[in-house]
Length: 634
Image 1 (tube, rainbow, N blue to C red):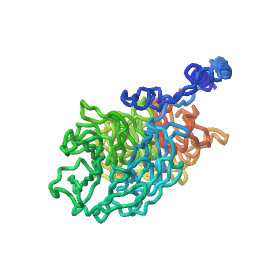
Image 2 (image 1 turned 45 degrees about the vertical axis):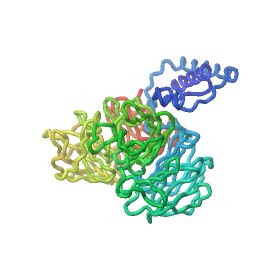
Image 3 (image 1 turned 120 degrees about the vertical axis):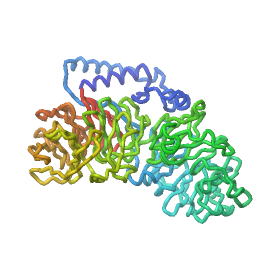
Image 4 (image 1 turned 30 degrees about the vertical axis):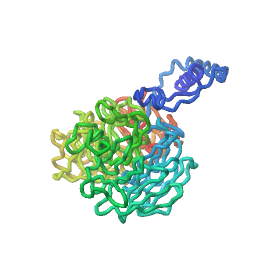
């Protein structure tokens, strides 16, 4: 009630003194100075404010007075509870503007992005879906899309988006004024390998799988064959504003004139795959989030202007794994660009002429492809699938630091503040993760030959054995455990199977937590199960799935847990809530989310999964809403 009263007073005062718009926390934070000039002072398009005479002041004064009365009536309350403290990983934050994807497909199968003349961004959003965004990161609309593959791409000609997609690499077109939910229209052209980003007089260029170059009139759908591209692999075609066509053949650039490639075998190096010509410069993308910028004549200066996680540029320019294998680059305005890569995340980049480098201004999109892995340290830094945020970062903040590994189930925090546990590199290679949270870019990922590593893990816990050996216990979804003895750097030296003996058959296991070196907690089958050590094995001593007799005091079927400072946090997936208990006696402390009522608001959850806590703070993956929720126990 106290929180409601405070909110009522704040909203009323905001309406009375600042106009009708209620600003969200992220909008009040400072943006890049350049981005603010382009996007508006608060990072969003300017909206007209209502005049004072239009505001329903009488009603609002009553609302504020009522809120003050409630505050006074509840001033003596000291009840604990879990409160919302912000969003990470979703630029739309909440409600209708919340960014969501289809949650299906492969992160590498993406169309990339385009920027239309109205200044809105179109980008793929999982298999079968394209999202449209405002420049401040809000979701404006969603559209159906053909299936993408790792060769798919799209471009835009006037108000028509051209999409290369499907198994047969067909061309489709979608009008930017189409109704939300509508589908692109097939163009009866297939077996396309590349399309140009640039156009002239409504025409683009495209290359077919049989190595022929065509010109396409997008409006009429008519194609004209220009000639063969010759031998070699075509890795991009581009049309400059004057209508000239250039091809990237086996990593070298060639002009195409009079039905043939010019200066064959003598072309200069390409800036990357799918080169793009923008305002007199050539840009190209390569792996590891690298963007290169060349001169008009292909002179390779300044060269790498973003990324560069491999090769001779290690450490020179910051790398962003979410931009690995970028697909396109579009200019918004002076020094501001839009780009996207693996995983359907869009970035606004700012060009620094003095440093000759790009830097991220904004991350637009959702927490795509993240299932449950999350860990937080004492400083509030939060690590998820591809990187790390600080606690005070905004919903549209890019990762402070990115990684190339994915959490395989659950990582644990060691007493010396290392993260440790099983991981996956590039989503497939099984590895061991160890290192410090404040340097996740330097976290070691190793294929350990001495021990057995499994791919589908769910729980991890760290403890000292009776003989003071460092131990890392892991379990899979079936509850089959492996104990790893690790060295001083948390590298596995030996492994052995261990048994978690339960009093009854237990099928679906999720997380582990360690109250101390001789006791263990697991979440499985909708129960919190407590164990004591039995040699190297573990024996159940207690399980519970409720904290009272009421229907809403019973857990759902899937639970994720985190334990720190005697506080047990429980993410109750099916019941759309987070609960907190004091471990000594399992006394209920508080709840966040509405029981059995999924939602997209800032006080709502939808199938939450992984959770990590330190002290009174917890970071939670709100899975169906594709965002991280920051929670604080008051």
